[in-house]
Image (cartoon, rainbow, N blue to C red; front, top):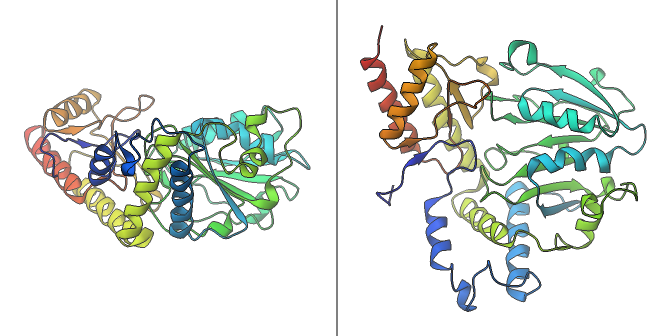
Length: 364
């Protein structure tokens, strides 16, 4: 790392941001582009900010090859608000929705949607503590469902869909909060994608929504104005004051990814980082990854020693060694290394070196 005071931050989110982006933002913090003001201070109606948000959207469209018949929205409220906005906008005919539950956030999304319509859990891996991704076929979904929802990467349990569910003509809705921009995707396979920014995109406070235009405009007139996608689409994400600073930082991250080879280049690095860490864990006598191999996440690597006290000792000594936020989610314990885009390969190398040392000192 360029900055000796920086630690390797394995937090699941908010997570590491690229150091060069942070340094560039810092240089412009009080005087953005010679405007004499910070992005945090400028009007969202100013020409300067209009350029910032337009460039952020344009670069994101280029990175993900987003088709012209999709709207890109920069909203607030995180993925959690989307758990409600999705059914409020997309339950429009049968008022049925099918959900695949593969972790904490997928379960919360289904529970929230059930407040507004007929929600069916088509498949779940909860019976095995979400250690695998269930297989689903097109015929598993109700043919009259208004949409099917799934979570591509499961932050808490460390799983990832190795396939995209085939839903036929039923719109497919995906929560990509913890994996957007980490691997190539075909946006045209989805009716809608949403993602909180605080893992691979920028600071907490921005939520990206990519939604096909034919799914917009069907919200009930009784729902709050802010929760209608059409309001935001018609106002280019500026119906009210958007999270200006977060959008600016996200735009800078998009530019960096583009300059360094795009999503394909990032995906290659992410696969290499994850494989290196999983290979070490699988060959270790102390550590174990409980996740089925083919369903393991590229972003969130979970592992345990089998001894809760030893796990706590591990995270404590790791922090002293400059490896921060390695404790597993409070609901399951153990360890979790979140190795998002901004985690450099040397961070994974440092972690593995520490794991080897800890193992040698704590055998038997």
